[in-house]
Length: 417
Image (cartoon, rainbow, N blue to C red; front, side, top):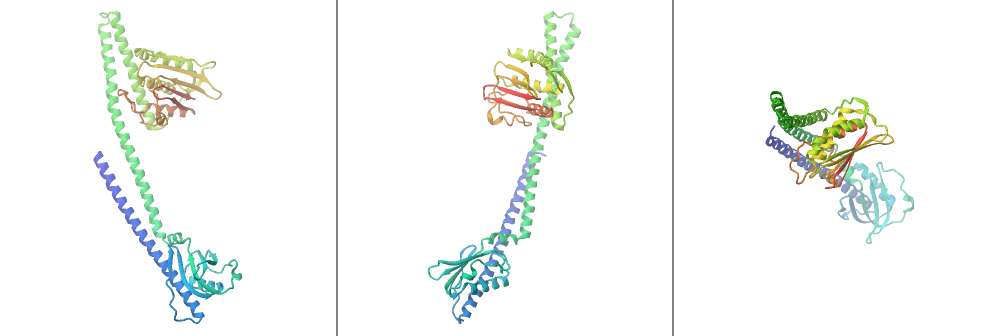
């Protein structure tokens, strides 16, 4: 699937989801507005009925009931200016709300006519309206009053009645999550596919080059060894040695790639002498370091240097750290490796004088395929696999790898196993 097709699919799917989202919001709002209008209508009818009965009991059958005013989206004000007691209002209000099937929690306030000061007020939490009201028996004074009723839970009560819409909203959210996850997986797989393709193409070329050089140098030694001077023989032998080391590194990268792809590491732990292993690694890398007029020093572990680990993978970890130290050194590489025993672990550090790593990148360098922007260094090759491999191997040993670095002042990688 090419990039253009992927972009087209993403755009079309996004437009479809945005369209569905707009439709969902529109119909949800329409349904909520209808519920709100129906609720307001029921409250209006109930309050006007209460007002009618209060006035009728006083012998007033002709006065116009004033319109109910919404002072807020959930507050209804009735400027009744009628003479009644709280008992009379409470009974009629409860009866009318029950008939209208209004079961929302409401706050009732009785206000002085004209001054609109609260004379008394009560909270009614649930239907039926037969709970004991605080101070109900104390409010016997008649007077000319207005009424205000607030429904503090109006929005949540109305929303709870839109069950089917809430269900569809949840389904839509799940679809969005699935779409986002699918998009993330697709882009990740595409990136992995591209990196894998580049990796194979580059590795094929990089493997052929040292093999060809080894083949040519070995043929010269085989066919013309008796005609070559000692200097020439050493020259071709060095070519074979260097290309062999180069080939070994490429094979190690392929092995690292295989380990990272599978996510499974079969460790073959056995006891061995860490000092001896480090000396072999240092000797193996010395020619490469010295070719750049650099230095590689190993500070031996003091005391017992026998550890139990996977020798092959641990060697690759150290090779990777040394290789990075060399690659990211602008000038003469100076690398110091040290090892020491702690209470529970063996600590191996690799210190270099390279470019260093900016603080914002230090948590990302162990992620697969992540490469630190190298500034002026444009010839650093790699696929961001080395340190990811290091982290995986070290953690498989039950240890951890950390880095301390200052930009342009080198880095120190610490491996604890």
